[in-house]
Length: 169
Image 1: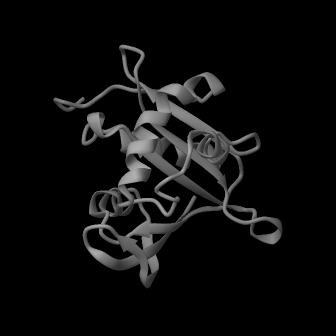
Image 2: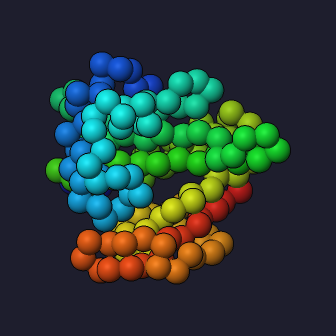
């Protein structure tokens, strides 16, 4: 284990985890830099969007002290004849960023999706300026299959692209 790395247990999320997830979820979404969610998204609506029902999956990453340090949701990307490709979204509490939590969440979702029978994983909207996420996804085998120019209005960088990223499972 690297110095500064967080050992996080990843487990299925429950409704009781939402009060621990919401503060950093809200901080990340309100910043408007990495998600296409409305920046004024409220807690109840956000909970419905994030805490998915089976056969989809939402998890939390919990450190040794029992603190929720990150979360992920994994779901089919499309219905019907496109239901064999998964998608996922990840959030790490900024107070715990850069310590391996995001990588652990992505690796966990890839394992779960493969075991669940998905043939690949597609990210529909990775903000081009989110270079840490893009680099992590590329390190884990994802490729950029296309970029929609100016599809994201970044509060600092202005209009920037949204990458579609994919990897087979």
